[in-house]
Image (cartoon, rainbow, N blue to C red; front, side, top):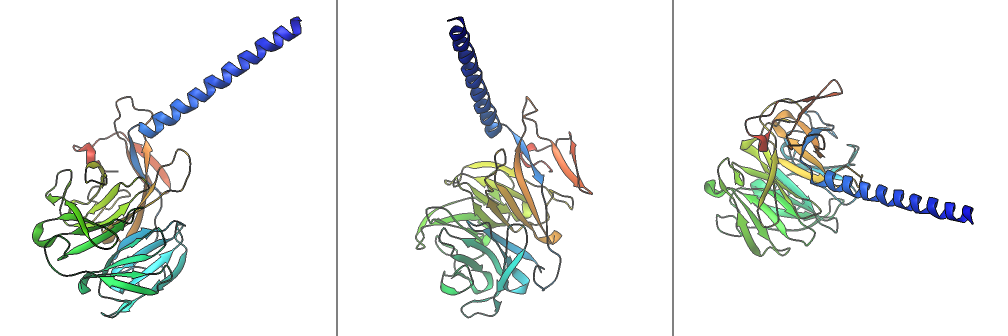
Length: 316
């Protein structure tokens, strides 16, 4: 009888310990998801040139559901396709104005079916392709009104098929939102340097939650918004170091599905001729939510406690 009572007591203690452990894990996961943090440099690839895997003014980036990376190699008038670890797959496009030809492609997007959309800047149109580069259709008109494009730069598509386009006709600096068939829905943005303002909006990306990332070129930063245009946060500052940007021209987001690791944010750092990759690292050590500055030198990450005068766009 005493053995049974001891066993019951042990079982209850074990169950209690398991419950406490589960609650602790849930609390840790919750704190990690909601804590403040910083973007940290991960890796890069590419050099100047026209061979496979080389770039001449890379601009647009998009990532499909399999993690394949599409890059608008603008001055080479082509689209290059890579695996997410930078392994080259294929390229398509030549200089021209016909179907499947380009005159300065500046951005690329992929829908849920794997179709590829390219902003053909100097030809004032969007071209649509299969994932292997087969031409499907094109659409767009030239002009400054709603649903028109005078200086289009970036395109992105959400999970519902809505199409976001960055455009800056005569300094209006805006994001336009359309249905999958091109019907105008809404727009947001004005010219400036504050949150939600732009100086030359370029590439766009949409994450799994529908958040919209905008490459704010002349402000040397990336801004993140809700689907309705509400500002969330930003990253970047002008410079040559890891985590700094010089006239970034596109952004893409990839979710690797790794616990404790958020989406990977790929940035086309055009004037530095490189691709930079960031992830949002929650700051679980700082009680006041202060951000740390992270740089990488000779493969070693160094964390510095200096905070910029504008923490919203702190130099990372």
